[in-house]
Length: 374
Image (tube, rainbow, N blue to C red; front, top):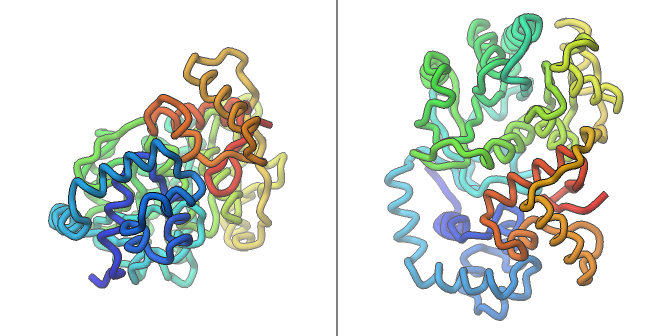
């Protein structure tokens, strides 16, 4: 497997607490290579936006704990199937998003060529608790797209995701599951049969190494990879708080197309998707109509769900921090890494609470994983 010469530094930088994908790209752009960034004096690192005194201390400790080459070699022995950003096998579409995963782990039988298929990849996502109508159409759309030569991408969750994967497998097409765990973990457990079908006939992808268990904060981050891999995202039954709407928002941010299966107004599962239609997403009027429409929907701006008035102490703390950082001289939106540095909470908690605040319409996310108060 050919990897860039600074693969060890991609890995080592990614292990530094507080260094996310956006800040990692910022370091690469500032220093030219991550090797040069790793070897740079601390005062030079401090010139990079998002790196403050607290993070410099963490970086100093991390750099003294081990050598990148040794740490990466050990990691590669335990996770032989992976691509580093810049590797020839790394999906090209993911290099176009502002927060690509530095390492991408894979499993299954489909090779890197699946990402360069003539038709491209289409995501199908939706609620974990669909109606019979939603299940039936998720499976039909997975079958239709797979038969037409599209690669079907979803998250192997219960409900809509699983039906889309099964439909594509039944068509003999190619399907990819993007996981929020290591590629060796079966989650949810009820999808064990589907997991082994994907191992034998499809592909599994994750930004997390083998042995990584499910965690709440990992699922919304996973959704950006689903959107980034695809030329379009299809929403099948998504209530307002569905993670599928997060995937749709990433799709809009990345300039991907968004399609929605129409649903009944009395069905709460359909209301999130219908709100996207109100903002310009295309309604799916049948399988043949979808095949004709693909590639023609312009990027759209998606709405925030209705606000819920009561916030937790942690959410209030994050809001106060956003307001304080704005007063301190930040213009416009605030980088996620800056928020993490300013809030006395761990990175996963901040990411999860920001997601909740975004769903509530209390904060707004902008390109580059930046946030502001509406």
